[in-house]
Length: 492
Image 1: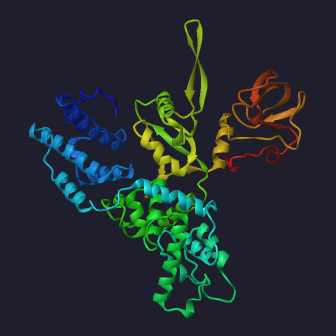
Image 2 (image 1 turned 180 degrees about the horizontal axis):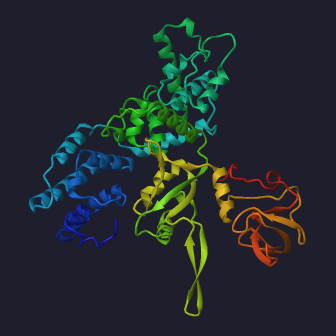
Image 3 (image 1 turned 120 degrees about the vertical axis):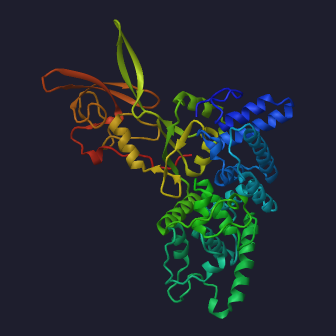
């Protein structure tokens, strides 16, 4: 959506432009500010898409209110913004430029029905951090018999659809489609002589006794780690919050769970839509991986029309450093154009408007809250999670174009680097496959090294090219022995 001055909409069907015009015409300063905030939240939700008056239906309003809750707004703020947009929309109806709709009244009734839910997103975020610390071994280790129940609680969260009592009843024969991280927990407790995975002396207890025992000890584990909630509800709430951080939509999350987490307003307004078993398995695996590891990965964004890469850089520079700025990769090639007698050089993107970025999956959604009007992130499948590029594929792409990011490292075969006068083969970039000799070794940008390589072409003409050290190998070394990449090594 092309930016226009706040009080000059491009046309009368531009709903957000109309709302901002009304804000500009308000005589009361506080009222004008409230109008602008409500309209700005709606424009941010639209992420650059134009909103016409005919677009305002129940799904749009439910999605907008849900986005407000995801971003940490209270029920009071959501209700206030809805009233403002409803009043402004009714002005457009009165002037004959918007069709009448009952969507606002319906949304108001649904909001009123969930006024008693817990809107404290900071508590959920704190619980998520404590869960992550517990899953990665950074929290206090419980003593006595509690480690077993700590694993039962973790397995319940990672399963994405099981309560601690259901996990406690698992038998060795129950080899369901569990995430690998959950399988690792179960394998630690599987014994040879008993049928149950966890040794809780299940045959000696009735079903109610087992439930009470598991609930009591799981609650003790939660208190020890500072996680709020009840043992029966907390695992689903924690999993759902982690799934949101992975970029999954509320609809996909409730479809995977099969129910709405009862205390979280984020899931109160979205429709319940079942998802295929294959998508559910993929979701559970992704969420479990983020909870237990959340490694750095490559993702892809596309710049929106009229948004340039320089605008993206400026926006990222304005975001506080605590918001986990990603590593960007926007490869360009230098193009020469003759203007009169002069040769003018300019950078041309290898793939226009496509920006690769390296981040942790849980950091992507907060990132696009800040830059969603400038770019959008590619997703995969019906569930809408962010599409990650395997490190091996990104390595091959960077090697093919001859441009690299700091995470990429290549080491020559053996322990010795190529020396001047030695024969080498160029393995990437414009001169891939050419064999020549190193004439000179020079320092490059940052920590890189540049080799000047001399080689003849098919007509006997001698070429001299400067090549990044990561694009060559010794002529007598095999490609597999010549290079290795360090993407999978941990980074801070």
